[in-house]
Image (cartoon, rainbow, N blue to C red):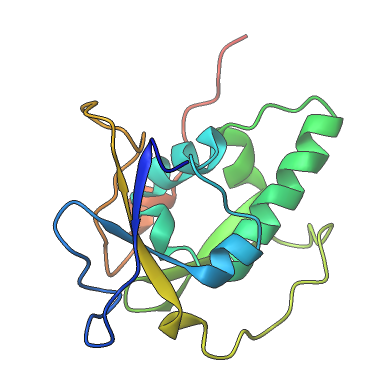
Length: 159
């Protein structure tokens, strides 16, 4: 990982919402919930569709998405934004933070803890070492809100 990513631990006076230039904030608990680098393409595609940075997703969102990916792959259902947006809804946790939950009564993934006390204080910064135009494969800028137009379903893929 270290040849493709640069990881920096913050100084005590640094804050998660102000990463150094070129870096993006991630949380230790996101790693505990299954996030790995590079971020899986289906997650970056979903984040690109809803116009938020993957670092803005709350902890349980990663556990939820990765468990959902296992189910979808088992049933040979494509891991694309169109399918994901049929199954999940995006909710605002607070300024710049979002979480994913089941849409309607699709409660087929359970068991996520309701709270992770102190998770926002355990963060680190990551920068892609590659010089590609878009090495993360999605927008990495933080947004404070997800507007309804971003929550529309993407076009249905043609077969």
